[in-house]
Image 1 (cartoon, rainbow, N blue to C red):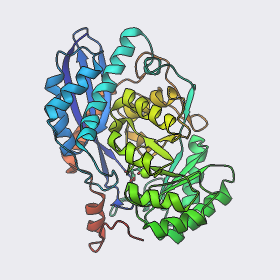
Image 2 (cartoon, rainbow, N blue to C red):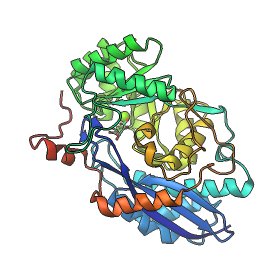
Image 3 (tube, helix red, strand yellow):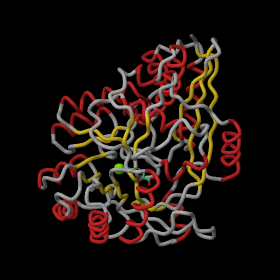
Image 4 (cartoon, rainbow, N blue to C red):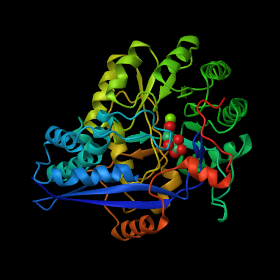
Length: 419
Ligand SMILES: O=C([O-])C(=O)C[C@H](O)[C@@H](O)C(=O)[O-]
Ligand SMILES: [Mg+2]
């Protein structure tokens, strides 16, 4: 079965004003929807970033995939690498960590691999998780992903989530998330207010949710000294502290000085980061993410490396739609050593999904693994067209949390570490 055509559709969907250590989410989040069509009439779906630089790379690579066998994943990876010719992406929004040439190949390859897995599953009549060794869980637990946020975007109506700028707002947001979705663990995006204020918010969450595992992620906003102090203050309260400080060296020093497990989706984001991180015992948990670890099979390779070296495995997310949620769910279902509830931004963005409703639901904080062939999701063409029109008219072409924050507070500067 050969690839006949690849269609790339950049889309934009409404995103609330979520705060982080780089600034604030713009009113529009971008993704690219990937459709791979075959000569046998079966098509598959993938979803990836929508930033201009990435979109340009997807567009440059897509024609090189025509004619490939949909089962030829290794050949496809080689073609992507050859077409990119060593091009290297940039961490423009400041929350990704260092992007390498090999990591750029993996980012571009990922949505095409997912679409081919969708096709293979449909051809074989099996869900994608069966192509990854089979599900070891029927439902994949996700965590409530809390953000400090404004009530609404400047000049717009407040959104339904309301303001969260301190412990009370964060606890109220957590209650809403847990009530609506049943989440059994909680992550707070930090790096927004002083470490003392964020410690207070975590204690408020602990009081309100005595049995929920908690995580805090300041996206490298702290020095080593500050990180050690926070780790001591929250010892026994957090299940892990995510990217308190920049670089493998910085994380290794924090890890040496505190028993707090450290997690990352910033200093270990490509395979070549693993040897130095392992050698220095810099991180105890790696957040996988098939969008940049090179798809579902390569995420399994990451899982095997983590298992070998006794490193925990969790899962990272960015603003995303249902095709990504389906891929994340199949991957997590078929990864035995995924030790933690996965991150997802989906509750923030689900109102505008490009997949038809019903296939993916949260029950008790977990998404039941689709059992239908392939990813188990279908495109809603009307919504896709509407979101593509949003993209054409919204004016956003690259995520820029810092630039958007500066339109509100011109004195704002991205500083890392800030505290
Ligand atoms: O765990 C993380 O670092 C993330 O989820 C990265 C995201 O970009 C998050 O910071 C966000 O959406 O603002
Ligand atoms: Mg993180």
